[in-house]
Image (tube, rainbow, N blue to C red; front, side, top):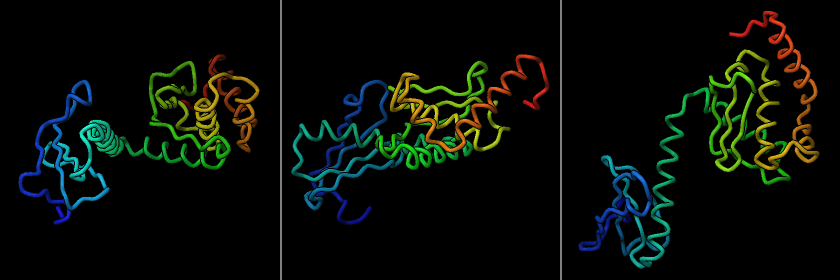
Length: 199
């Protein structure tokens, strides 16, 4: 810890603020420093999360900002535990959102992951939670097909219904029509019992 982040004698507040987070929260230690003017930081240290605050921050502001900072640390840890394949999928979703949904604010999902329990759909999205799941049946398919399914689910972060606006967003992807045909053919082959090379 740098000298600027050290708390002044008598200024450390080791009281746990876990109850502010609700549920089973990690141990949290709040440290205040007169040297710290505006910046607020948080990090993991020996099993607890330490939040560094300016000394003059009000108690009300502390109650608001500490849970936010703890949530950021936990979210970062969760991302670091995600499988490499899921991280690659998340990165691709972010790229598609920036390229094709910029006019909609480039929505970023909270998580994107492969799942093995979607046998009747290629992907799903929970807009309220910002989560996207793609069927692992897509894994052997061309990247442009996976992009289409990702784009379809990303569009649900903007428009929940399959209406004209939704399809305009999805169809911004150059290979959208081609991918629709590919998936329709694949689904038809499965329905007919034709071998597809699916794992």
